Amino acid sequence: MIFVLTIAVCQRDELGLYLWPGLAMEELDFRPELKRLKPGELLELRFPSGTTLTSELLAFGIPARRLQDGTALVSLTDSVHLTISYPFAPEALPAGTELWWLREAEHSEF
View 1 (cartoon, rainbow, N blue to C red):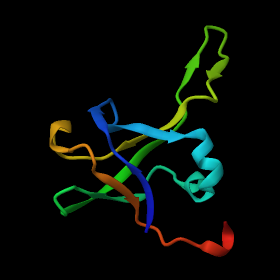
View 2: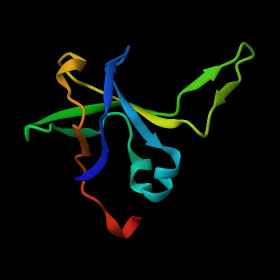
View 3: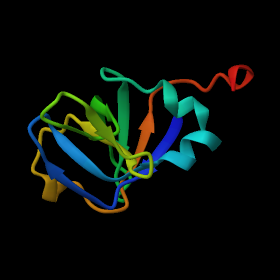
View 4: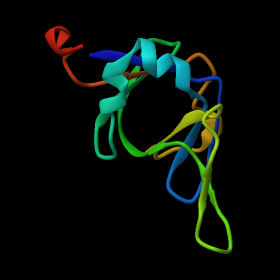
């Protein structure tokens, strides 16, 4: 398993549950294995109470804004946002919950 982040706040969006904070761009330089995350990956939520719940990554990326001419504007100072599946209300996901990627680290590749 690979630790991804500790959740501070979450909210429901059009796909699922949007997590904050995201992953800072600089963090991806120090943790290159996280660059391999993609929608469909299985995740584990580890609640402060000690219980766990399996989730799925629905979206992973830097938010972009499209201009009228079709050009996409992306801020490289922004964080990588994550949206996960979560069957309960956002209020049921407490701050301090850890998000883990259910993938074995392949140390030789990093």
